Image (tube, rainbow, N blue to C red; front, side, top):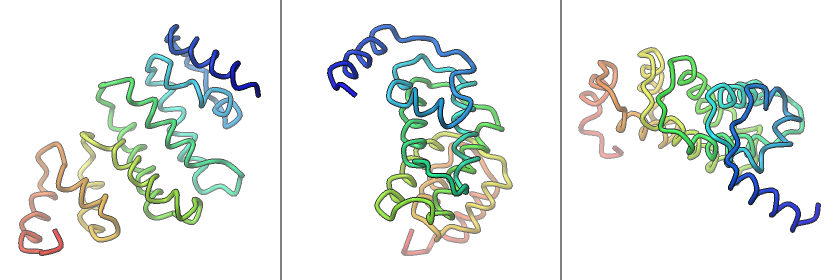
Length: 173
């Protein structure tokens, strides 16, 4: 594609800051058409959830897709909001975080730490259901990002308090 035309399209989207329709992304093909411009759109929670669901649904698939591109686009698009998400969206974000840690065979070794960092930051300041917090506590040493989520958990949690008390003297932490 002509790079000048591509730059002009990006500038146009940046200036116009369009409001995306709820049906902007329904499949991977739709995603490919908007991934370079989506972060210029106004935030739409429906579009965000659809992209998040698409990413989770495709994570374990054998299709030739760019999981890295999906996660980067999610992160870039989510910067357009300070909105707090509902429990279902937070659980979907946790599923993506979990996939980035436990199902790394679907990304390159170089991309894996970057994806884990991005999914970790997508969970920043998100309150999770207690059962997911318990999973974090039980799987502390699988990733430094899990420790990060526990140490920076934004709400009062019995599971985190119990974990902190039992790990208080751990030199690793």
